[in-house]
Length: 249
Image (cartoon, rainbow, N blue to C red; front, side):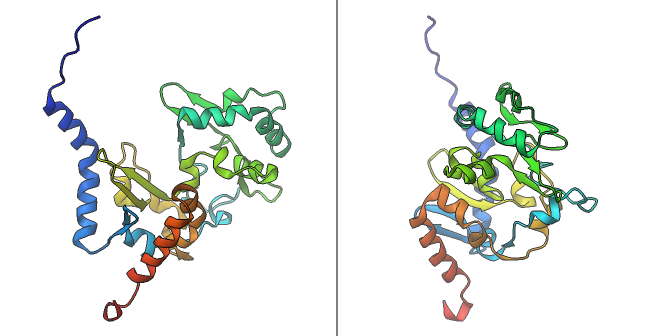
């Protein structure tokens, strides 16, 4: 066995800065504008969570006859999983395949191998079939549904026990810095510039319309799943303070 050679500290610093520097600059911008809120030790993007309105209305983006140029997160976005997430789905593979073979018999055969649902090389991604997520199905009206979410509801399983965290959180974004600090924000053109393969978020009608409740209310279930109910209570209190008229603060 060869002796361990100490890595050049400048390389370690470069790797950290390459990954974190855009996010640090984003946080600095939020802080300078008074839009960064501390909630239980988590840095929260007040503009994204409290001032942005969002409604998940899949009848706009997930129908067979959706308008030209309108994107859908279940169709255009690729979802990357961890090994643990993949293994949780595989453990219940027989039930997943049986469910989808009833909901989408033209595409999913009853004896299909659950491993074929994944593009499993170095990264693990959910495959696309019929121009949509491999775990999705359409009902008689042409509405697109998440098969993993629907199966969990049918079986009484916790959603997070089988549905990928990325899908649960969307359009929320969580970034963890090397020192343990964490930022909670949401998908936007500015945020996606910091990813290796940015998406064109503003083509998603749910983000474009700015309709519905503030982001933190519409995404309450996802936030509670990821951070817990106590965190959400503190987040709601921070939202009330953030949205007060300036004279009332």
